[in-house]
Amino acid sequence: MVVGLILGVLCVTPIVLTYLFFIRWADRFEPEPWWLILSAFVWGAIFATLGGGISSSIAQNVTTSVFGVDDADVIGATIFAPVFEETFKGLGVLLIAVASALGLRELDGPLDGAIYGGVVGLGFTLTEDILYVGNQFATNGLGGFVFLLFLRTVLLGLSHCTFTACTGLGFGVATEAKSWVLKIGAPIVGFGGAIAMHAMHNLLPTFFGEGGLVLMLLVSWVIDFFFFVLLALLVVRDRTIVIRELFGEVGYLLHPRELQSVSSYFALGMRNWSVLLSHGWAAFHVRRKKQLQLVELAFIKSRRRRGEVGADLDRKEAMLRHEIMAANQRGVWIGS
Image (cartoon, rainbow, N blue to C red; front, side, top):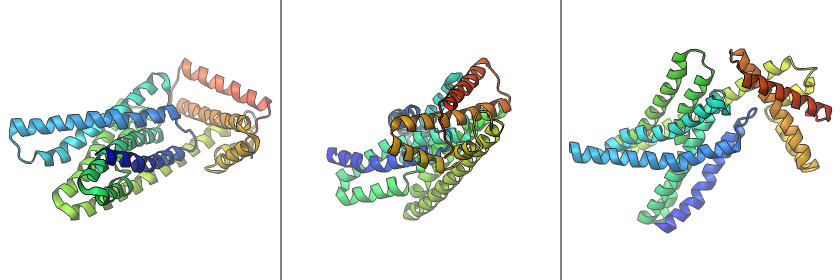
């Protein structure tokens, strides 16, 4: 078992981290801080895995001993696991949402919510897949290990990510909602969607065997496809916000060519890396800092447009404007 776990760590970790870096990279305009991304990942890998697994096992044992149910394993896979695992994963997103509402201000909309939820799900995937493939190595050898690794981590590696991204999307929608019905209802609907997708994912192979496994793979790929479509649409939405809110600042805080650069999907990022390689960290850092400050200013203005007010928002906007002007006076230029 120890050898299997070591192999699991060595093989599963690079694949899951690739998914993680891609999802973080997809957040083109207002990337979430790495410390919070890693916190969400650790929550999924440790707390959600332990809490969901232990709770599901307890519920399954109670069902067997108290009610004398013969198919407790089936109930555990199709009901208890989806409910308890998504609850503990969703709790991680809830903590980020609460911290953001209390002043952290890092969950600002649907894209942020989907990313944090997806990252929690990837943390869960890391631990669960390592345990599963490690056990498979102990019972069926290297062939079984390779097969299960390919099935779970490659073909189905984004399943938990997309489940919990649905919960995160609900919290993200709630942050922008004006009505309390939507503020409360959106996370509930998102959480319910996560449980439903998770239950379907487990139910198909449990009840329909190999045919159900094939169908589950096809359904999972369709869900993954729509997850990427959703990310793309939300990134386009963020770009629209950046252009709309910074357009009125052209000629004052930034040059038209800087607006074009800061709202590009790829050009500015590639240019920043070019600056890093040719001029070093200091030049890269000041460019990147100004870029992020401009985008943050755009989202603060968008929050004002939605009706948000407050002294903290006023101080943050004033500070950003001051720092951007100071960067301009130092000659920091991101127009190319």
